[in-house]
Image (tube, rainbow, N blue to C red; front, side, top):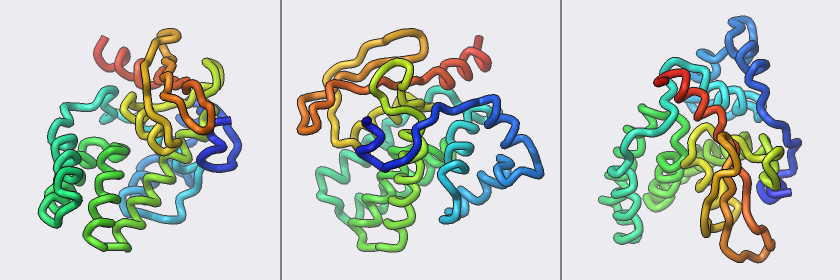
Length: 215
């Protein structure tokens, strides 16, 4: 069970009908505007269920962009962080770019991990812990959606880039990818100590949102 590599939690695929009902109910603790406000304010009391509502419920929002915009600037500062071994200048620039990326997509895992790393290099332990915990909470929500062992139990993502963040957290590296059907792809991974051959990901919500918005 791949999800077990990250946390011992129940694995349940997202039910978008139930999520929609919950996040649109103004009397619900999962009412989306309030959840998003708490998320943006870095509320540490958000539960796994609420992170699932936030993450998967984002695809039901008007401002959800199914496929991310050009992210070359973010990749550029990431490369600079590596080449300078996390210098103060590169970290400061990376933080600026990552925060800008999060204004477009509050669940940009690459931007969040960039912030966590940059603050760690700057020895700002409070900020590092905040962003590292937020990244962990989002990844926990994602891997709670499936164990990734077959098409039926694929891990659900709302952005294809998140597949690589999940693999990274699992300590796996991609070797190749292939489509299984319109909603699921299989990422074959390089040989590893856990003998994991590959991981299945379901990106159906992203595809459906794209069709609804642009087709």
